[in-house]
Image 1: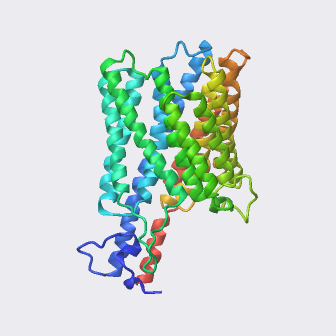
Image 2: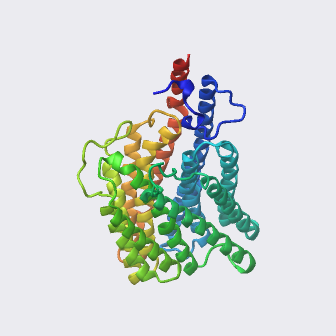
Image 3: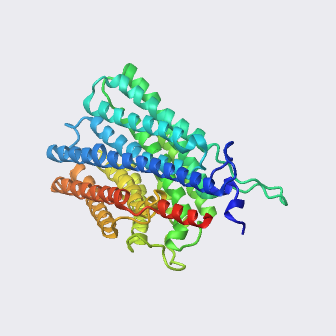
Length: 462
């Protein structure tokens, strides 16, 4: 191994050397640590924004909507714009912010991508989501604000893609002629990025249409169903699959994904999304459910551990909740088929989407977030393992109660189920607040790994 002074700037995460870099090892280490701190601070901003949209415009608004629906035994007295505003804040504001923040953090550190581009993207994205929520709820100049919001979100995604396009696969080795093949997890994440781009384009086009010809500030029901198919299965599902394929073999001590089954799951899912966007709900839901079953076996989630799961710094129940999340994905797929053939009042569709967004996506975030977010933000571990467990337990209980009650209430099968819906909302709101508090305390009070790393490396150089 070479000395610190012999290490090239690219090996230290600097990419291309700065023109003014004089080869001094101490200056190099200081530059590396400074860039890592900037990336860490930018990630914290993204995560903080995501937590805000998750807790207030997202979950709290969803809870108030649920109280109104339960009180009136239906959706008739609740504006569709309020429901869509809640959903937009949850998926774009929460999950979208997390994905973009982690995406920027994972990119190689270059001058433009350390602060300027991520900061510009952050301002555009959060402004767009906040503007859309305000327009949906309050209706003030909503025609103009819909277009402005959708434009901001699309520009932010284009900036993200432009920054990510600089990240290339390693070149082929000198002795071989073939270039390294893109790993499956990267394929899934790339497809989810394409899905997100399609989603923001879809959103912009329809917002312009509403601004010109619309009579109310919400997508019509049929159009909203197609939009949700793209949002849920064309973006959310694919991005979670990608990160699962990347992290779960290590975290759960299981085998790497079965490539053949993983590709089959992707084909089923993408075909289902295409049919769903085209309005063919029944065959779309069958293919989506098939993809959910296939991905469980592709990721070897039914296999036994090949060693100890990596639960250092987090609660030991982590592997159980990961598997529960994928059980919710299969449940969402099967309920989607039921909804496509039997839903009359929206209750089965609502339960299916809730199983996917809360049971699957939110559970994955609540489980993996405490494992990776502190590390990415330069902190040793999550603030409280117990709070992590409490948030996951509350989320699972609330989601189960919601998914069971919603079809029974909406379809008129059990009127008492209207009384249990607010309870499910209260449990989920509590779960979100506990998760947000745990992450916030981690960022505020957690022991910084960056400072310790700098002291160690500086001591080595000295």
